[in-house]
Length: 468
Image 1 (cartoon, one colour):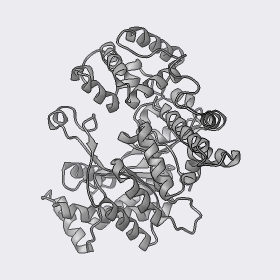
Image 2 (cartoon, one colour):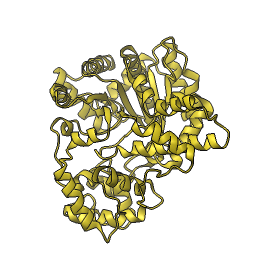
Image 3 (cartoon, rainbow, N blue to C red):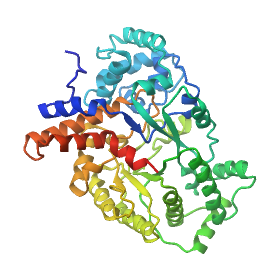
Image 4 (cartoon, rainbow, N blue to C red):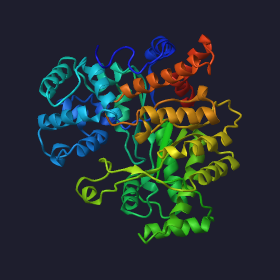
């Protein structure tokens, strides 16, 4: 029997029934990913399996480094064959890591390859995958279509022109909706040179950069309107830790002026600024019916030597162990609710020890008059938590404090066009979990109820939650 078979990860009869009857056929609503919009617009043709599979995939890069692969074979100038060979030798050693499962799922679903990838068969699989890539014309769009995706939410800087999205929208041959998501993180980094670069790009758009905090908010709101006209449904924000610190208008303006002059910004000043801008942005999103996503808990770019040589987001990040996140999350949500400007919101924590902290906090802010189910969501297992155990921990904590029935489910959160089997992985884990609860007598074996649970979490909840 092939390793990836029909009942892969389904260890009980109820799980098999739920997956094959309901979950397997559900489409994917990809509400958060990092796919390159230009590649979708141009229907990018991949030169080989190495470009498709390894370019930009820091999950694989971390594993290769752990397996002793030299950096030139990972992010350097080695040939595609050499890089694939190095990954193949690593792949068989990822057993116990979700990469082992993802690798085999991706080979099976897109290339119909059942063999386990190893150092001994890498050449044959490399050639076979490249043959399929060319013969089936597995372009960017074809891979999205093959994955049964109905919506793609890319991640875009406020200063992006969104020309790629315009091109996608005008092309009637591609009927999958692709919309930008608003990611204003550069406006947060008032303590480093990213902020100066952001202001320069804002000046290129408006003819002048903001000279006051009030002007910054006005310019950001104009960009929010620009994104809204392009069909945006969500924003996204990356925080090292949750922040909340009150400040007067005068204090915020003084902090902003220091940032304009590139003067040193203290930790307390940055937290005051972040608190205010998150609240102001949240109000904009609430007014437009967007969902506000916050991902927090990552310590980024920790290996300074390689950061200086390779730049950010290349696999040198880890989990933060910050404190007061629960207090600050409650205070931030409360500040938005107090103004009656709390948008739909999804909170993702990277530190799994905070699952119950976050799940219990979001439960305080579900009240609304619009009939939005679980308006503030405890987000799916993210990054270091999109593993079998990580997903189970998140779902169990959510169920302990809220309504699993209303969970918006899995996010792709990937730069790879062949990452969609991660949704299959999630769905198999979900069905197995529910099946175990049924067969142990903890969930009722009631078909209509179980069907609704599986279909809601796999797809329907996301569709209903993100609509405006």
